[in-house]
Image (cartoon, rainbow, N blue to C red; front, side, top):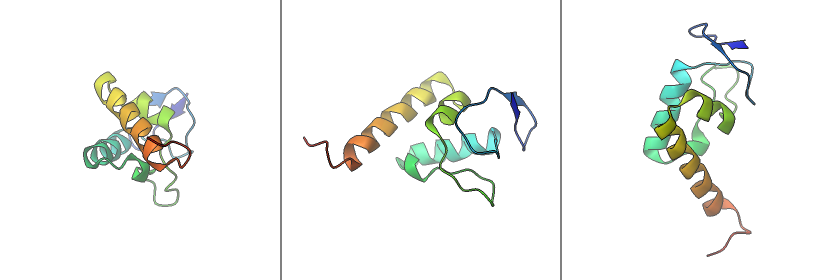
Length: 86
């Protein structure tokens, strides 16, 4: 288990940076999802700024938001992968 450096709640480990957060990261994820730019969601710790891993995102979000995150992630992949053409 890892402790959030912000609230100290314990969470199961997923692929993420060492600056695990929950409340600030949820806010960052929700804002990025509203803007449709999930690729810009990054760790809130000033010395890190690594992209938030999909496993971390889905572990922090409720079921509906996690589903939306996965849809945006798939859409982003389709839009940016040069090997996928319509």
